[in-house]
Image 1 (cartoon, rainbow, N blue to C red):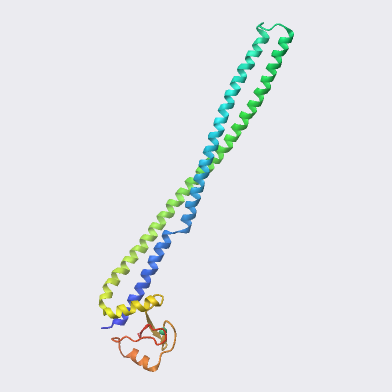
Image 2 (tube, rainbow, N blue to C red):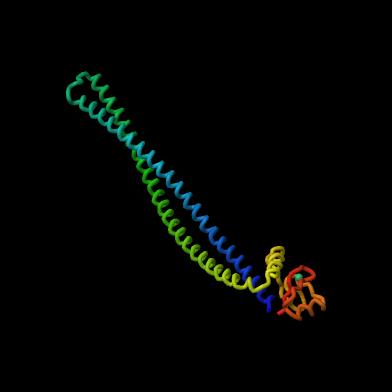
Length: 237
Ligand SMILES: [Zn+2]
C-alpha cells in the first residue's frame, strides 16, 4: 500500500487545519472591531460627562430663576412704595428709588446669567445630539462587523470540520509508527515532516540527495527514508 502519498496528504491537511484555526482566531480578534468598541466606550463616557454638565447647568439655571423671582418681588414692592403713599418724605422716596434701581441692576445681571446658561445648554445639547448619533452609527458598524466575523468564522469552522473528517479517515490508513514519526519530525520542523523530492533534492531543505538515497526513494514506498540533511521523511512521486 502506498503510505507516503497518504502521509503527504495528511501533512497538507494538518497545515490547512492549523491555518484555519489561526484564521478563525484572527477573525475573532478583528482590530477594526476592537477600535470600534473602544470608540463606542469613549463616546459613552463623553456622553455621560455631557449629561452631568447639563444637569449642573439646569440646576444653576433653576437657582438663578428663583433668585430672579425674589428680586422681581422686591422690585415690585419698592415700586409699589413709590405710588401707594406709604413713604412720603422725599428722602424716604429717594431711598426707595435707589433700592429699586439696585434691584433693576440685579435683575439685569441675573437675566444675563440665565441667558448665558441657556446658550450653554443649547451648546451642550448640540454636542449631545452629535455624540448620540455617533454612538448609533458605531453600534450599527459593530453589529455589521460582528455579523461579518461570525460568518467568516463559520466558514472557517466548516472547512476545519471537513479537514478533520478527512484526517480522521486518513490517519488509520498509515502505520501508526509512520504517523508518529511524521508528527514528531513535523513538530520540530515548522509543521513539515515529509518533503517531496524535487530535482534530486529534498523539497524542504533543498540539499541534493546521494545516488544511493535517490535509488532507495525511487524503489518503493514501503520504507521510510530520511533526508540526510534535515531529517525529514522523503517522498518521491
Ligand atoms: Zn532535507
